[in-house]
Length: 138
Image (cartoon, rainbow, N blue to C red; front, side):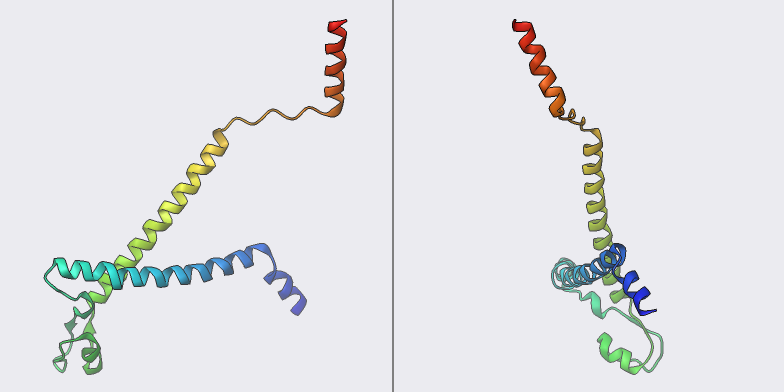
């Protein structure tokens, strides 16, 4: 069973998938930072200093806090600001993936449309061509 698992794990597709997951996690961290540290503060500044991460609706009367972290400790809240931030994360990731796939498809179409180079003549063909050319000169 161990040998079979090792063969499965070392197949190209599994290794490619593992690399993709690791790169995806790193890319997710970059997107989270981009949204949380760059885009949302700009949107907050445009909208008058609003902080989307603290937008919530209390679902119980016991919640009296003004920030999301304290409100979650006090009771149930509907954290729609966090949802907006995560939705923006998703849209950025989806757009970047769309652009990558679009670029790959364009490269594939260019390669398919490019005319194939004529095959290089074999040594026999080159020799016969030389003989023909010499016979024409004679």
